[in-house]
Length: 288
Image (cartoon, rainbow, N blue to C red):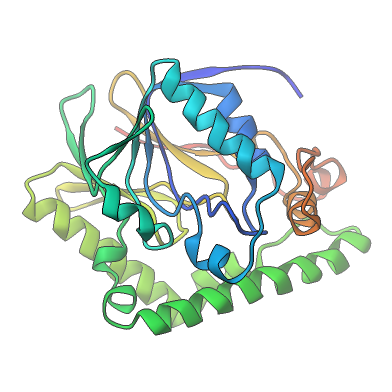
């Protein structure tokens, strides 16, 4: 793989879910090593407290991610951590500093072009999380089960020479209730930004990376590091762009999840035959 580096004005990451077997820590480490930014926003669900309370899973690669984030802060990057529902334990410490990292309940980011973005995880405006937390935890369990089923489904595909295919992504886009949930969430987020007098909003929570104008508000969701391995970045002219890192770097998602299940690292294997069979990496999504 070619060694390269990129510099951005700001980087937004969320839904890393350190502490779970689904976390693609090795791929995230590669991203963190290859990119630099003046500001780095951690937009919630960085650590998965829900899973860790039930089952302790903390391989060395997860520790390496934490150390890398702390190192970026020590070297001068402004790092802001906005806790989500899975790391809600950190919300008690908002407006305090954790080493060189600032904890905030929400933030406002002014881009280079003067546009103002509300930075928030988004669970506060998810009716299931807010009013039926037990149902959210059932949904979390079902999601973990779906990721496991997706792995074994892809074991079979891998053995017969077919490329990696995400069952959970397919269901998100095809199941009517899931599509409605995503659409409702995006509409709510855009309305929150509009009521606050913002030009845009950056959030996470639903593991669905997207940039799209919603009326006079630019909706940005930076995705996740469980399935999509996506980040939102701001260029020095104020443009927002989604980076699909695993696709750009042609990492094997099948191998990454297999390594995570085994508790090891080394998930940075090229797609190889999979890439030859599958479609090429998508072009980055940008917004003016």
